Length: 411
Image (tube, rainbow, N blue to C red):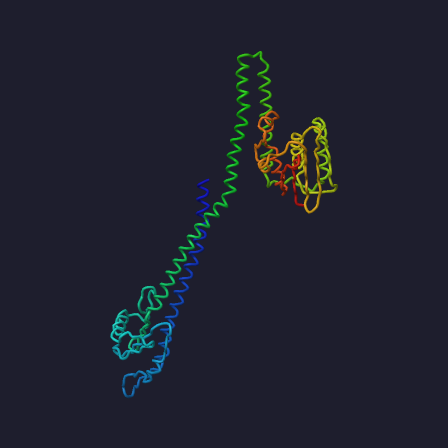
């Protein structure tokens, strides 16, 4: 069970972690690309506006091409979100002028050093890793180099990364707790089923152990004293008890196959209940109990007829066993919003707080009495499974000297 819990927890945790990680990565990648594209646009915009104005060569005079005289127009380019510099170059790549588009206080000497470093890289454009790179540039040989200060971008991306990491860690903690809670909810039915299975094996082993011990002891006694017939009687009695228990166990196993609806068919439930009640008239009479029926006619239901008969036999047998002499067993069947079947007996009631436990396997309120009557506490567990097979529920309660078993089926 522990291994199953760990596996379920890991599956839930990994699925949620992958989902959160994908969001975390997508968020930072989108933010990075947005800043990257913004810097690229700044570089392109400066180049386009500043240097498309360069006049053609004067071939007749053999003079060098001149930079535009309207540098004031170039200087008017403003970038609100970042600092941009334009370094004008002569034909020999020497620095001719430096234009600060953002009125930043960085000295011209420092900008020159940066420009020389950029030119030495022999690249036309370099943006680099925006988390660590101090500057981005666009270099046009013998013309210009545009430099973008990455300081604000770097700070923004790093802040975004730190905040998202903190959120990621917080979400992972929440996921850990949520995965643990979900694991407990998912494995709870499995754990209950596992515990019931262990209890079932323990109870069945206990019930089989006693008659086997009697049979073995009686066989040994018979072997040493073959004339004593009481040992044969003991063997026969205990064998019958074992046969009854095995038959009940098989019925229980069949009733728990709740997905088997192959033998279902629409039938007259009213006639089936009435027939089952009449079958018990002799047993009721022998026990001094009266049968009273109130069965609404014409009620049909999609059902397994054999199992419904088995359900009625269990409920009527239980009612007879717990009725006082001179009492009455009532069988009621009616259809309103749902189909309701009730079997009511007068006499011994269900102990308080045991109303749900009586449907558990091997439950017996009176150990000695049930043992003498070869009753193993499997009947009501079978009845519950039959009701579940038909999409219904069954409940029990005792009050005012009457015990009511109520089965409700969806109509």
